Length: 222
Image (tube, rainbow, N blue to C red):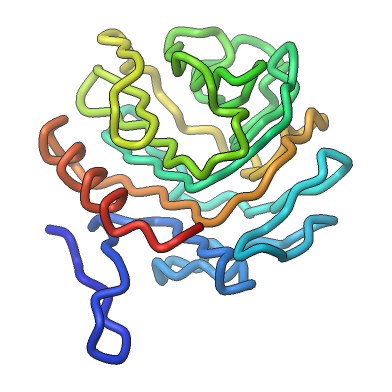
């Protein structure tokens, strides 16, 4: 079930259950608030404007591998609050990755990158391959969400479904370092990131979408 976060008697937001990583950069801290110890190390990026600013030149957050960050063939829910005004080409702006996206065709490696204003989520041999309709380089705050339930994966922007892959049951079990804001080889993303949530709760698509809607409606960033 969804949990309410209460601050000074005021509901500040919602978090989905099953979180294994939760970075809230608006608090200028890469500590994992999920309690699983998946803390980040910020390299180059600087806090500003209520989030973590990535300038596209060796700015990233590094998170050491852990068992919690390997969903395998199970369900997962990824939610990222972000904003960018940059048109990046040829998948040259990696938002989050686990493994070398330019490496051999291993199904366990996965990530999300942006080309122009289109955000893709895929594994390296594209047995999972979904994308937004575009426009996510408009310097506007967006909630990017990727949900997998069973063998179906969907990608959303601001709680609106953009694409679906019904054969997305690949084993995502890479033991590589997780990078937020780049690929292991570079290809840095440019923009501001506010919050990253990664959960591995077992949920139907309807249940996971209900959580996503609550995360979006709670907002909390500008």
